[in-house]
Amino acid sequence: MTNKIKLSAFLAALCLVPTISAKNMFADVQVSDIETGAQSSWIRKNQHTPRYPLALAQSGITGCAVFSVNVTESGESDEIKLVAASTKTKLPREAKKLVKKMRWMAASKDSARQAETKKVRLDFCITGNSQQAVIQACKKQSQQLCGEA
Image (cartoon, rainbow, N blue to C red; front, side):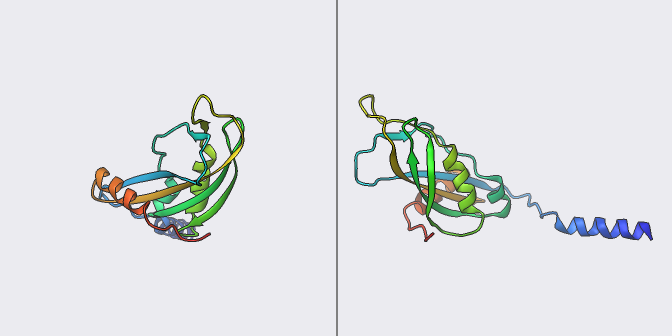
């Protein structure tokens, strides 16, 4: 009887393991600063592409999210609010984690260090073609509307 329970538990656990494809997948995150019309006194310190969140990649989730971010006098992201998202799944939550990590620096040496509200858009793309193809697809996606909050 104990062996039947162990076997049943093993088979049930086996069904929960996601199927892994041998096919290569390529992912990209495109970060865009949305101009609000006024001269900005802050720019993102790290201009590199953030890592695609594992939770999104494992689920194959793609899409976009736009956030309103208050940049403090010390250049940290504060009061992050979702403005729009293409999906209400895990994407907004994972995107917000990336925005929280953003650090900002003065746009010029003459810029006054004062709090400012900025809009930031993150696009998440996955394709099986190539890294160059996913970058192009993400740039194209970033030109389209990004849903509603």
